[in-house]
Image 1 (cartoon, rainbow, N blue to C red):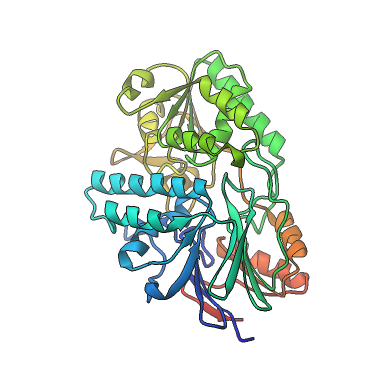
Image 2: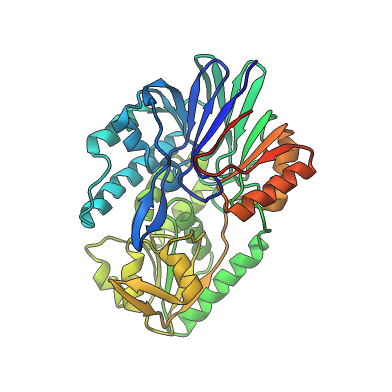
Length: 425
């Protein structure tokens, strides 16, 4: 039937800027995701983009796994450069992408940076985005399967004749408070799998939640405030559900994009495990805007704010004001990628705030509320899919190599390509 070509425009032995191109035997070109990642070039903080894609007008269709920045953040540039095909995704992913793309424009303007796209490019790509759980474009069939990562996240299978390719995107085989786990992945000849935690096991989720509750309760009882740096999509809402169980004596505040994303999630409640629980949690929260932030900054409380990797957003204002006080607590509730302030803080104990490098006086705690599968779950996924070939991606070089070794133990051909590499399979 001919070979399938795979090109890693991003996420090759790295976490972030996911973008994979699959070329089927009849020449059909399918694009899977198009995201960004933080990077540090010569001491300058930038967002790294995928490798350039040529002849965008020849792409048959694109399919987007979910709405995180590292999977959708560059989509508007594709429209600017000539993408003119359907972009398949779930409705909640489309709305999340809209929020993130407009927010990125706002951030660029604030930093006096030249944006790589404009509002009309955003509107153009949004007009291309549509939802259909399964379908056919040309000679390639596609189908979505719930991935359990965040609301609306999917794994995507592509088929042409007897050839098949499954892209897991970011997937999670464990229930969270917000979404049900990934329960089913179909058989496919080629498996492109999320390797973020491919070289380790997750701690017990219940133990992590109990540690979180204990830290929050102790800090509040000691007269301090709790700052929680959380991703706007999914992690913020999961934290709100946890806090709602605690019956705290002080107010819980929600600041940043998490406000808008929570409204999007509730508008698409069919993707949530328990939408009523999230509604109830939101009722007890004080929702903060930039206009009234200063009023709340001086009070005691719990403050859930973006960004999750301390790359900007309202969390930095809380750290500036409350970070020096040893009574206070900063919780990092998600993965801290290389070249982010969050990773730098964990490594050095220092952080850049307002252009000045400082050592925080407050206690800093990183807790693993991961929504990615770990090594054991990746093994189970490979056994479920029964592929002939496994491609490990979206992980550090060590994590990707660990998945390669695991796949070979299970009798598969396996590869861990770098960004920019191409395979013919």
